[in-house]
Image (tube, rainbow over all chains, first blue to last red; front, side, top):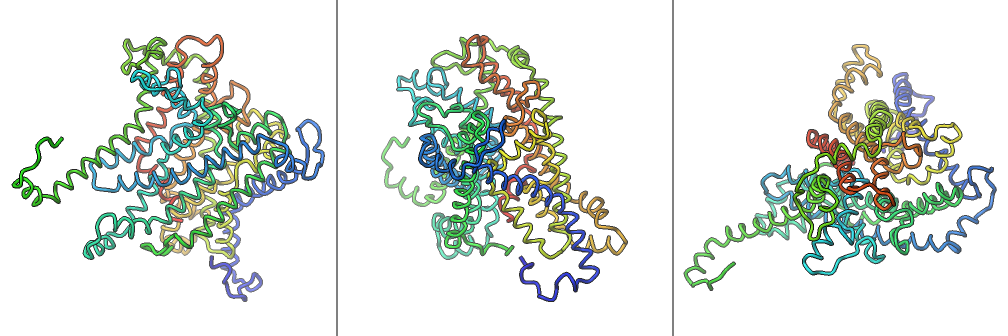
Length: 313
Length: 301
């Protein structure tokens, strides 16, 4: 971040040979990224924005239609409202629940326990299993007729739970599976917890602070940067969630489209209906929503994130 | 558990050792919660493996049977030959996983050098943009990129997934930059005095030192491709080019369809097991690397 406060006389004309050499080598090294950024991010983004103002089916040339794709989304597409509701429902519950449960599990792993690394491995593992396997297993376990969970309930004389066939239960089931696979967040929290200087706890203990007091006044504040990081990632990833819901309840999101996520509608429009214009409009709306939430999280973070940690980076 | 009301003497005794008793109770609770949680993470996978060894009658029994009896070990080879899973595995590893892993690791290590080992004006600002790209949803570039690759005639090949890998990944660049920053600058200075060029320093000094970080990037990239579903779904529609993830889905689709072969669920679980095994092996042998990778990206920002 020092680049912006460089003294004014250090412009390119006054550069020493060594400085020029460093600039040239620096640019040589980052040039693949610059090329990739332009070719695979900037150019496609501009194209995507332009396509969003057209009707385009890949077969005929794009026809400019102004804002029609956007107005269609907001006024003439019942599925849009549905997937927006589903996705917000999913993100606004799964992100906080996932972060809180991951934090609690990390705190548990951080206490004095035997076989910590084995437990840590087990807690992390669901996070790196292929999504298609996760979906297959859960679909099998939760099936209302012969899934292990429901046949156990049946054998116990209890009513079955139609996890993936009742519209009201589909999204909670997604959230449950999301929380189940929070291994990455657990590891990040665990590392943050281990970074808290021992001296803080010792000082608090001398002052007579009990476990909960120490947890609330030391552990929590010291972990707020990790909470922010996991929260932001959960939001960014959550708004784009595709594979698991798509595999669990199919392209149309199961009964009443209760499980259709935003990204699935987008995929459908692009690759099933070949409506590239509408898909691009959907993508830009998504981008703006993600940007909005990321900025809000970062802006409010000044109030609740504590950056006085062990070292200033 | 406590049957008799405690006598006064007992109470005094308990009060004296209250701290330790409280600790014991907390310990018991702690391990109870830990074990319940651990089971909830492992049980679905155990169920997967056990179900792979059953036949249809055992799968559809109520209440569910845990231990397959008899166990049908032949389900594994039978399931594997329902589709050309050997081919899918070959595609996943040699057409997708390895090229992408080599591309991402090599290019990110090169790019990260420019973001950490050489100081030049505008460097940190540009690095901020690298990080900001993590916020851009896949969907915003998905459609135009598909059109570009289609116009180049590269749909139904792995090139659309492999070529971009050679221009660095934000995640890989970030992680390697963090690692490079911890290598003392004096090493580079000494090499420069000895007349080494920047390319030589990167290749001969920094890369060998960065092996642990390179392993992290390579491992995560490879697992990412092995697990990836969406990108191949978009670009690969020919069955013989499928990666394993799409291959597994062929079996999943067969579950609901008419004319489904017997034992489809055991087969599906058998294939899921086989597909998960490489992840388990990699994870088992590189647990530390995994943990390092996750925590570096999460914290050292």
